[in-house]
Image (cartoon, rainbow, N blue to C red; front, side):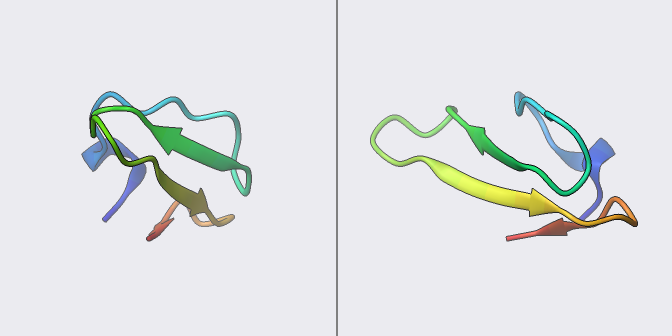
Amino acid sequence: MTVKDLDRISVYGSGDVISSDFVTDTTIVITIDGSGDVKL
């Protein structure tokens, strides 16, 4: 998965932790490494 595949997620910068709010009761936290790949 790459950054462009994400939907409704705020990206704060490569390597930073970002969260998605599209799940009502669960926060999904992912990190983006230097190559732009998403680590779930």
